Amino acid sequence: MNARMVFTLVCICFIFNVRSQDVGASPAYIKELTASWQGERFPDGRPRVSDALLKRLKNIQVEEAWGYLRGKGYQNQYEGNWEILHPDSVMTGRVVTAQYMPLRPDYQQLIKRVGGMENRDTIGGSNSWPIEILKSGDVYVADGYGRIVDGTLIGSNLGNAIYANSGNGVIFDAGVRDVAGLLEIKGFNGWYRGADPSYLQQEMLTAINTPIRIGRVTVLPGDIVLANRHGTVFIPAHLVEKLVLSSEVVGLRDQFGFQRLREKKYTPGQIDTRWTDEINADFRNWIQKYPEDKLPMTRKELESYLNEQKN
Image 1: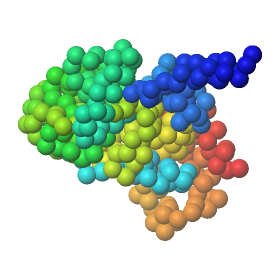
Image 2: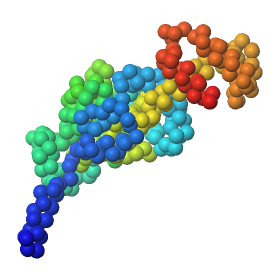
Image 3: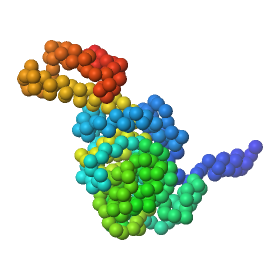
Image 4: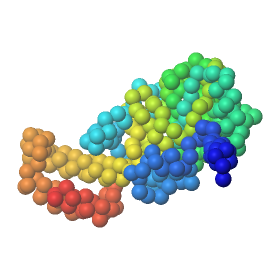
């Protein structure tokens, strides 16, 4: 085989292996991003944190989740200063990310062409693409670079579609429109930067399920979000279970401490500092008598956690 033929074969192989940049991240890439997760995954590669754990997470305070993550070296997981559709509600869910940028015509054409190759709907606007892939328990999280006027990513029509697919809501570093209509969608909630009657224009979707920035947080697809009136915390999937259990135990310790303070068994100084062996033993005895059906975790989980902390 001569050199020219070898060169030709190499070129052919190169051409067949080169592909354009996808709009949606591949399952392999998402698995790389979330390599610390060892459990079940969705077909798109995102970690499949259980619905039961998402439900337990709703009872965790933002400060407790934030403190746990900082203790694990994750210093930048909280973002606040939101407008919220239903401030009294709590939302948890598995993150689907979307990246938006100011419109550039040549890049937009490429995005539309690649989206068509990925069998996405190219008739309507590309801001519907992340909505089409939402699954039950997902939260649509988008970086719209804080744009409100002409940066309204959804109105009531897309809001209804989001809730129909996910049974959840949105977190947008961007604007929304038709707040009155969004408020009528029972069960839907949203954290966003502001509302405006304008339509989305001079803005384009560039990527789905890739890392994005929401304020001071780097958010990955498959993160778990805890959102309430006090802000949003984005939790790496592999840390959720331990975070929930640790925070639940903190809640039980608080209950014990408050009760003992009311009984005047210990002083505030004793409860508000590192507990002595006597207080720890008292807590273990107190927790043994705690009603089984009132525990936020199983008795086995609790005992295993306490034994780990003791050792």
